[in-house]
Length: 325
Ligand code: SF4
Image 1 (tube, rainbow, N blue to C red):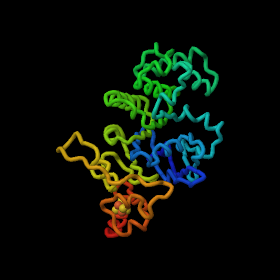
Image 2 (cartoon, rainbow, N blue to C red):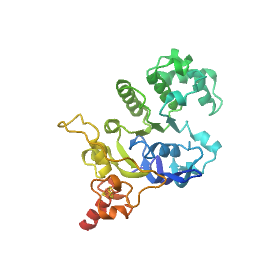
Image 3 (cartoon, rainbow, N blue to C red):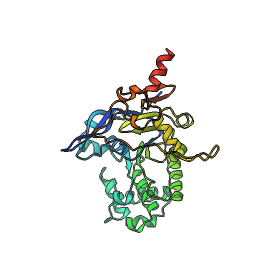
Image 4 (cartoon, protein in one colour):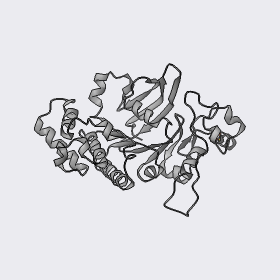
């Protein structure tokens, strides 16, 4: 197996407030290989956006990385200075935010924003910038005439496409996407996802894709990481997690989404709501909502257990693995 492009090792992030330290990401480890599509799913507030902001080194106070490493192409990004990060960010990895309207500068045309991004990485001629800007807009299906448009003159779908075009200016090896389609209607969402996948296959970049939409993950990702209360609940190949989810939370998420295959079935939700991360439950963080909880789940914190090629944080598997020995 080749070295991973990205290795996140025991990464923890807290929001350090006067009232409490809120541990939004707790000892998360993951790897992403070149050209791989990793989907990260979970309910709102489970820490998935904080995690990808930490990976991209875009956290701002009061959020702080309290431990762990983010090794990208052999370099620990956590240890780099802002100046060193500027060389890597956007050129080697880029980020597409949830809302392009917030991420793009409303006072500048698309061309001006592309120019700023390219000039931040060195002296590039105006002609070369215009040529590359036209190329990337073309890649996402936007006519070059829109280079001189301002963000408010584009539809929601076109703004997101423009953000993706900007993320591809330097053809990076990793593109981190934080719910880029969540503000779009279903048709625009489907068309944008298809385009992202085609671009990924054409250029071979890896993708980390954050979403709460299980159907997006099912269709487009190679591997899935399910997050709950700041922790990895389960991580493995998309096919095995969708065919045979192990963690009761993964099962609950899948039961809450309709399937286009197989017989019709009633959708069920997961009772309760995610915990306050300032005061997470003792033992397994999912125990107050878990239909399979056992007595020890309230006191013993589960590790991640390896079951086949999947890792799952649930005491049920500690018992099964022990019984199998
Ligand atoms: Fe449910 Fe217990 Fe497994 Fe947690 S450890 S998911 S409470 S069975």
